Image (cartoon, rainbow over all chains, first blue to last red; front, top):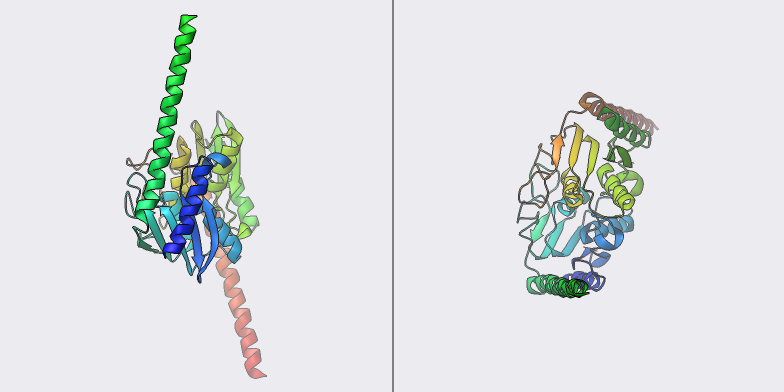
Length: 166
Length: 166
């Protein structure tokens, strides 16, 4: 189980290296990783390009069919409502989650879409897989971004002062 | 308002002609239709290829930015949780809906994701736009599919009987 979350975490690291919010996801079937993806919303200018969505599309191409029965998802951050909805449509068996997302999570935090009995599929959920590492990469990313923005603001203020002093 | 829903309904008709569940969607900004799409889940082997998702991705490409502020969506069937989640991420201003979906709708039927105050965007919703036409195309599609399946079953039974009588 840990080896699959490690693969998802590697995807999250690729996202961070590309300046994307570091979330990674893999889909496993019969012990084989059939899809690997990371968040690409900024790179692709596409609000739907979350790691889970890209992985589901990749896995569906791999299987040649849009229902992914027998597949498990490993994702570093709790899926949002969009991704949780896609998990239901794709009939993913089980979702293994690293860190929870109290702001937008839809597998138990803000809502629980993957286990809503009024929908036509229920996915199993297991949380807390390598939670510390999955959470750390997000915290580090946002801390670095804040610090860069702070530096930019200081730089900007310095330029403003220079302008004013001309 | 009706002219935009008519454009969405034309997309739904294209879906039906391609053997896809007939749902169509357009996105409008400043009076211009910037995205038109219909359900393509079967054609693309992609459980995420709902009309709304394809339209959002198209509109984001058009705008060159993944947030679609100032955009309105017209969709023939109430968006599901996946599409409703995407509407929230894309910051669509207002969603105009044709028919409601009591089985999977996430704009008021099974749940209401686009107006969940814990998420970071609330979209306005207006329902019942050309409801009769939007509902009719779905009913006709499923009635025809059932009738074709029934014919196939009869054909199959006839063959079975022939086999048995050999």
